[in-house]
Length: 376
Image 1 (cartoon, rainbow, N blue to C red):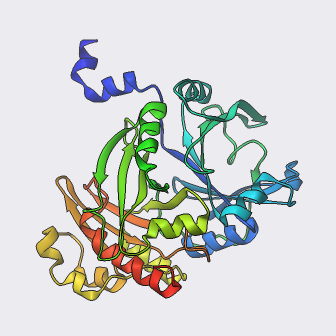
Image 2: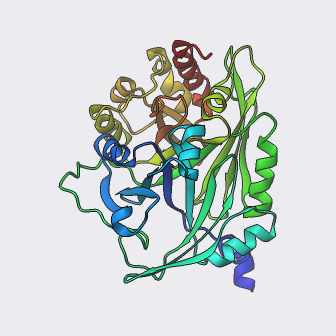
């Protein structure tokens, strides 16, 4: 016991009632999964992984799983209208339904979270095929978003039972995306703190960073945000809510068009952001751009960085520093016709923060896009 007391990591692992091994996959409910999977392969460099549908015994939906390094996306579409997946798409458009978290024991994860007030979405169930078994359970979170707990230590198949390997001739070269860094949720007015409490009480997360409307504001709009992290830091969920401003904030626009609370963006890690963003841009991914003046005093603000400033400026990559290092980040424009879901590309060079120094420039860029849509 003495060794545990002296080692915070051991102590934390010993007391964490919901040990998480990271993000297992992100599942999107979409109007056309076949085309969505093709888009993410073409534009983002994912590879074909697995398929489930009528041919595999699944009669109500078709799902395509794609992978790049430790990053797995699943695109699911309903095959008939009288279907909860179809209802979700009618309500929200294409968007994130499942943030699946890998756990050593999915039954215990469900028991721990539901006993602490979590609303059950899926009671523990065992899925089996010739490659072994996966145990899966789940709880509801904000809006119609859910967390699934995935236990796959006894499984050797491509993805999950019910899926078959998806072997396709077309597998474009990857773009250097590695894993999910964090996922951001947008919630309604005065709902940030209740959801912060949910993650604290139900899942044992802690609030590691907070931003108020003074930190995240422009002349026209503002929002507030708190970053929730699990014990080992493998899973981080910032929670945003609107704040009062002269005009409509980006969170309000999201809530209007998503028709409720949901996942605003998924941050994807890379270890070479210049190469990754160059590849994504060459494949048609569109990014928000800040004015060139952002770079005039960048090194005065953040100090020495390893990267050459010229490609950062050409690509529109932002830089920020905290006490432990710096980070580089850039945000795509919404990837749907509705101004809802988008992606962040992030490279961390020691920094544990989320780019507070970039908020004003970033939000002004978002507002320019909002104004063009007539939604500011």
